[in-house]
Image (tube, helix red, strand yellow):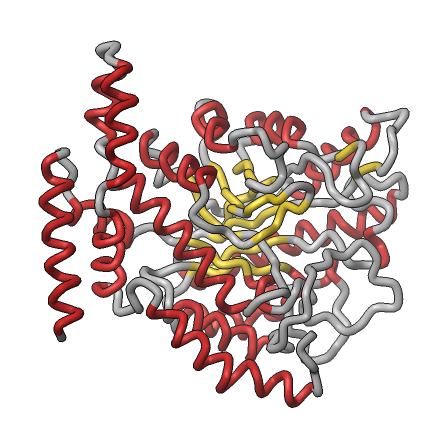
Length: 429
């Protein structure tokens, strides 16, 4: 009780301090509670999915680490997500990949997937009042090497076009069932390890494939189409067919969402700077928030300067209703469920910091040319008592404030995740 009282006193003091800067902490808390974050399901099982083993699953994505407790099926993965949501304030979403279909052990290839193969996910999401987002899985498949939608082989392109069409229909079914639009995203790994002699033709084939995928008109109240580029990847160091520039032009012409993955750009690029530039021409954005470290694009999100800049640009530009925020990382070296909690809480902290910024005052100083005061105020607000407001928000959302969630996470690991290790005979390395 004493601790709770001291926390309430800390929040009251913080509220008064922010009020001196004409910032209402209650309004900021209310706004934050309305922002959903889409948790990436693939963090929970190392991007393995539930497909039966394939003879030649080339072109996959490989997380590093062998921490015990990986989810092995849909029941375990959903239980882990439930645990994560119990430690994350607010009401959020889950971002699925096509490889998380549950087909009862039957082999259903990706071009034949249907909404019924995600019935368990839909039932679970509906019972918890969660939204779902969706991604086509254009990798880890015998037909994914060396290319998918830009393949020279018409039969390969046809297969992946059919997969893209199936994914859109699944996304639309999810959105209709849950009453909230599903963002259905397309990302492909097509590219060249060494310098290509022809950059044009693969991109022409990709454009035609996308045209075929998007030919069917779907209700935007149920499904929102998104396309995602990349700077480079393993095996595509010299050339990526679906680059950022390619998809930016396609999204602007065809009225699609552009997905910006914060780990898919050069480390010195500011993704935050791209937001206002793109939203002047494109209606909505999907963000896959990640943390790039050198050449690896998918580390767990933390409260870095880059993430704070992203949140600041979203709030300053009044873009909250035009941007969909999801997480995208996979780390098998630490507790996988904790990764979701760390990443989501980090993103939410960045958004709260942005909502607590005296934006109107800063922009007024800028309009009047008082750049000295603008810079000085930007520095001063860095030391305002943000933590007390964050803790108050967590308490109101009935999740642990501060580091209190760590002990709950350790208890879940002891009671649930460690038993999976014992059942599999895993040994922690």
